[in-house]
Image 1 (cartoon, rainbow over the protein chains, first blue to last red):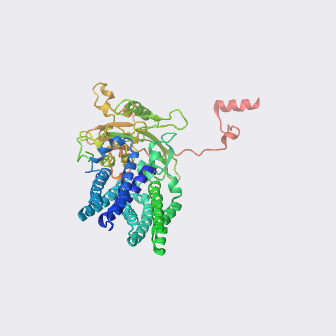
Image 2 (cartoon, chains in turn brown, red):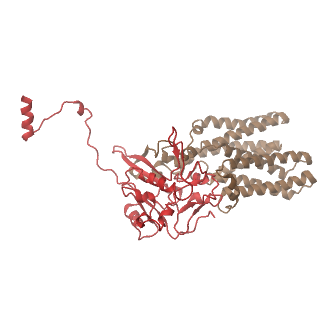
Length: 292
Length: 249
């Protein structure tokens, strides 16, 4: 799949923002007031920037409000509805703490739960697609949720918990890659099933339908990510889990170390998310003689 | 509402005969011609006369080679457009309700004024039947020429999809695939019509008729033949006499 910058920004930043909301909702900073204001601004900023980035991907962003209508059937619509509900709930919760010094735990817990549901919906936009076998596995939502929780724990300074989450994230990510590598073959889709010509023999593309490229090929068939997949996986794993875990276990996590850990994790998150899209095979590629 | 209908009154669709298709691309051209001036936004081209031309098409013809070991290769021309699936995954992913499947005839359509151009329906389609128009930024797809098939202003014989009307080989058939009395239904029964990617669970309405397996083998070709002198060995009768007489001169 084509790794569009707008979608990578959307899923990565909004995941971090909603992850931070989970921790601020359950365990608001004891100092209250200004500290909460800074953290809440960060959480709202990340998720809002992420959601706005997603609208850059649209052909007609001026009609985006229509996307709230189909929550009964569409994961993308559900994601939009729950995201707005989360922002409103968390916004109210944070405002009450910052301006009035009133903490309403019920609102906090509600925004934490809504934030997790939002991330789950984001993941399901991709997990639901049968056409991209690599994404269609239970580990995809697990991974998105672990990314959000790990990022949230790191940003909110829950050091010990974040180390456990980092380890879990690393294991889930490797498992998702291993599982994903087998997914296209396991889906049963081949050039033979795509054309129905299997009973006649082995199928090969003789002539594509046109001499140039087209929307489908640009959108669904991306090869650079797959070519360098192994190298990028190692880079992603070292940045998002390896280095943060090493620093977290060996040095005292104060300001500088904390900053390095967060930056490294976020950089790794971007590499992993780029790869999530770039190495995913869409079955339509079979009609073009590509490996999905 | 982008939920799929429980059932449709008709299942209008195409039956494409891979045994007959000659790969002339006339259906591609006539589809583009009709649909660029009909339902919804025109089908734009980008850099059409330049170095890197591309454009929106609702129907494309691929050409495949099928081969079994020790058997001659067989060329199959393969037209592909929207299959108007019964369980259309493109419809249910749509966040705005722009994509829908009609209850009255099963045609899958896009209401372009509701389309936000997110592209998720194109991702959800295993067949590559939906293309985002790069000028209009809305999703385009085969409408089964909904503006022809019910059109009282055109002669009755033209009230079929443009691709079907234009096919010079008669490889494309249109009708109600849910009606056991229809020509297309019988054609599918007789010829073993098949689904594309049945494992995707989309239950396509459009069916493909498989090509007959190629049974004749080409005679062994003598690659050196053209390089050698002409042999007249075994020639008899008048031409044999002529051959010998001319040799003697």
